[in-house]
Length: 518
Image 1 (cartoon, rainbow, N blue to C red):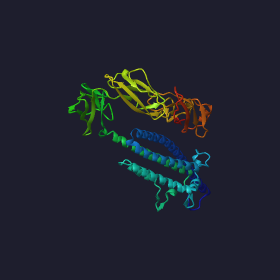
Image 2 (image 1 turned 120 degrees about the vertical axis):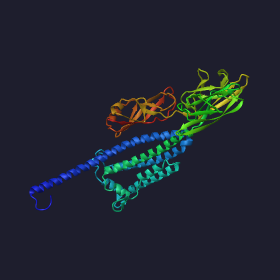
Image 3 (image 1 turned 180 degrees about the vertical axis):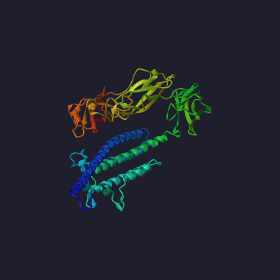
Image 4 (image 1 turned 60 degrees about the horizontal axis):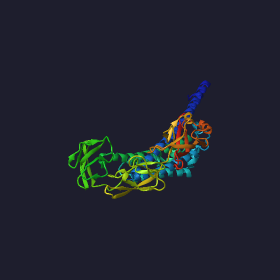
């Protein structure tokens, strides 16, 4: 195509080749821009999913910290510190993306986001960084340093070493090596790049934030649980058939492991020098003469085979033998606490004393129902309630005992569809517009009916629609019609009340996220 004199025909052919090559380059450029746009969509969707999964794990860790503070309280505190840093960093980047694309009319037209001016003027001023460019780099460094410090503080073994290494790699802002010399990280990653690649790059940083959170939470929760399930962490518990044993009678009860599991079968159980062969539901069934009045010991061991080793768990417990009952037994049938706003079933009895000889003190909210020792408690204000019980012995003397119960409010309900789907669900918008919005309390011991009288709906790109009732109205359906596949519809501000007890003030109902599938 070059050299010598060319005929007019050859010159025309050469020109056509040049035009053809230019057209291929233009098409390739558009395809690359569209590919980055699609990648950004996928990252954004994945980030929403990661947020939901991380949120559920944060909630699970908080529950474990409440139930087992000695194991999970410190981990939960450090996890929340990382959560605060992550949310702040994520919001900072989201603001950057909004500012970078503020002049883009159609954010779905990725081929139009081919210019480099928006990114260059945002991050750079000549050879120097703009204030926003400096703030961006400082934010990354601050996040990396603070999160690494938190993980090092929380680290007891080696479970965070790999996470800290990955953190330093993901959020490394050191100078980048070139074939000749180095280049500042910000210039290397953002100078001269099309706008859509810059936005996608920022979405990837958001994905790295959520990945770091997920790795941290997995290490915190699973690390502790793996320690818990080891046989060496089990303990033995003596459960008498009766709270007290009368003199001259046989003691009846069983010994179980602290982490009760009916499928557990020990290799051998030795109690007071004798092998126990009656094993049922994971416990060794005991029956032997009670012994003298006073305190008696039970000694022995549970023996389990774990791999090639034998794990020996010592049995060291005591039981009391009394001539007559000397204390009351008060227990909540469903839990160790009572909930405000519901009727809590309770059993109140005293060993060796008939039900008609037991008197329960005047406790607000407590009343007797049919059945031996059966009561219901409807607690009012306050944090605790004490129940006093007096039993009349056969010799005419009385024994009085009391028990304090903690009072808790009913947990916050969650907005739901299809009766039991809450949190984040996926469905077509044609199905959503027909749904009845309800409310439920996940994993609550009581079967409560909650009435919904209204809610609000937010569709991306449309104003919030306030609805009276439990179904979408015409305004909400119109707004929903504008939603696109992948949009997240938010149902919030749900108005709810407790059926049969409308005077009880329920906590704020948690929102529902519905991702549109088509």
